[in-house]
Image: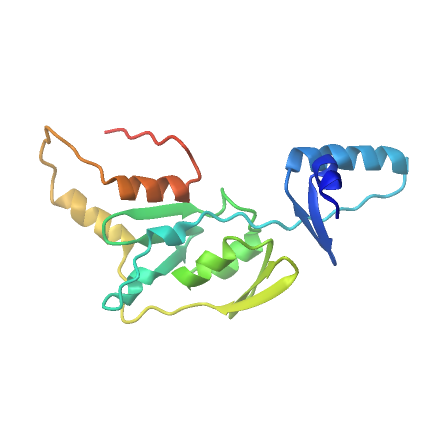
Length: 195
């Protein structure tokens, strides 16, 4: 597809039944124009888009602590930690996963390297044993991971911190690297902290 057409329609490519969209607003306007031209003909469009947050950035690649490489999905919440920060994302509110896909993911663990691939996919197919990621017409198949030993409970980490109590602090420091990771995960330019 020519670049000039891409700027008019917002469509980057069409491969089989997969449409890659670069500009959603332009694409919607293009659809409205096409549907007017069809004047009554049926127009059916199915877009399966994957837009998962790059939560794998919160994981830690440590051979001595392999469970830090895993993203846990429990009750639609994807959780990852590097031992310093814990990031939780409600997958039912971000991305385009269907209720049936969320049900399949419940109780699963996904390795950080797998998430690194699937968060960039054009579309995802899930079943109980594997993840099929389609990117530019190429399918990649991944398996779910299993924790080594008992997987730590994120809720317990937070409760332990709360039970330890808080000491008033006069000065607080933030690690710019951690703030940068959080900004990339939540795809935002501005972060607001409240105490």
